[in-house]
Image (cartoon, rainbow, N blue to C red; front, side):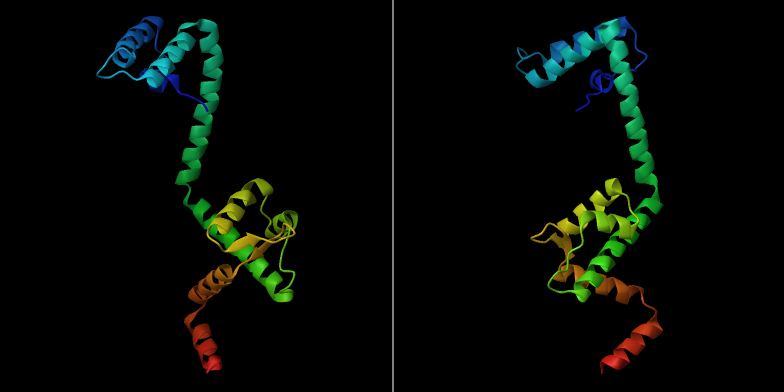
Length: 182
């Protein structure tokens, strides 16, 4: 787990040695385990580690490479979180997986499963992205693993897929369906 030493010490990544030492002394006194009011052994050891890393030029250079990678990952996360089309894509993929598994269940109720690779191929979603969707659908109880390790839609999954289809169907189509049901 990456620890942001700059954030921990509340300093800029451009802070000089004097600033690092000054802030370290402040936090060291505050969180030292001997301080009865504000002592925190875990926080103190993190502060010592941050100071020792950022104070040593070679260690700091190596750390700054990791820090840059961490910032890149944070930036990617922020971009993905702010992309509203991502949520729409997630819904489309999840509905596609449910539709595939529903169709498979209708074809053979006794052998309703589809394997990971086939779901990947049929959904057009790469495995690294599909894992999230399968996790989500499984956590919701809409799909489950069969005895042979494939995925199959559950009763709740069929109910969900049907309710989504009904909600998205045009009013005229629903009226026709209702008329045929009588």
